[in-house]
Length: 328
Image (tube, rainbow, N blue to C red; front, top):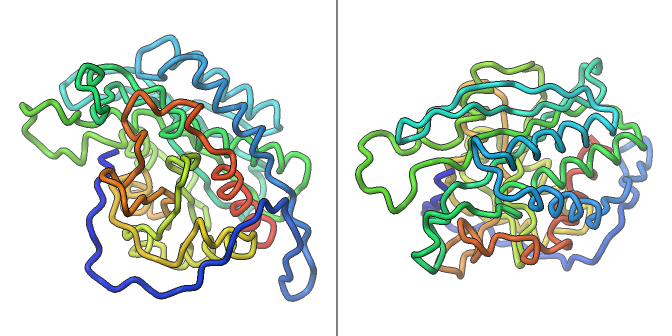
């Protein structure tokens, strides 16, 4: 997506940031019962990221793309989810057409009380933010910007298969999110924002179901030194969901990675879900306020590889989501 952060011209809410230890799940008082939240296994999510990256960059039309799609389908199926492909043809900013697919995995699809967790699984075709201009036309390995969200979702599905919660969960892996206008192409004339998030745009107009209480988008959830500030569009369209997730992070012991502070406004897969499908959806996405590129040093570079993934970040995000699922 066009991950440009616009500075929010308002004062950040002052907050005390609790230190985060390596928590392994715990009890949460909900008024009637104390729920034991299962532990999120970051090593399992990391193994999935490495598997995805071993196929090579998952760009539209590549063998790696097809091989990884099959892996994702088989992984969710083995964990008891009902899995399907949503086939689609995508037209890129330059007129090129590719066939791709969104991958849908439903845990206990008969349950009426449901939430949606989603991410994108494709790789950016161009490392247009790499410090070496010679790499600007090379595809991105996409360990963080793609594979991390899938890895977290597969691990959550594994936990669900062993510890039944009271709600159903649909996992959606969007295709063609990161094939938007490259920075080196100055000939394009048109709406740049529409060139991103093609898979979620398609899904939002052809949803497999819409009866979700809310949605949560995961984007780049494994980076070293990541912190997840409150994204502006998430607050605009789904502020109550932001409140739920940040409260879950606090209960899980990860307030320092989910500070009560504003980040920026991001064009990402949550926008079509909010604006077209009318599903209140938030974006969990990192914000590096002191760095030149607010999405971290590996964003859209060849350094976005498994060596630059931090299991502690995966743990914080995954445990927060499990906290939410099992205490909702």
